[in-house]
Image (tube, rainbow, N blue to C red; front, side, top):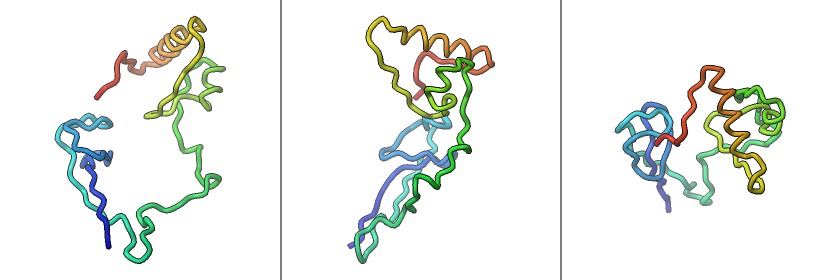
Length: 122
């Protein structure tokens, strides 16, 4: 028995969601999500045939564009700079300087002419 996978995909940028979204969180366009149905399971052995498996060593990481902040130790800790559309979690004891560090990072990025926002866009 085949099982169909249903998801929503932005017709402008290709972003996917499991539910309908009125505004795309990636390209910020309105009403661009269309319903997509795809056959998710192989009829013979119920193995997913949609995605090709890759060995971790075969994935090229130099193709990832990183934004250098200009704070050497911060850039080193996050792997060479900030990756667009990534999430980084910063934890430490209260008073360790998390807010101060992030304000310094935001300032360095703003000095490069990049836009800084105090809230997430959705």
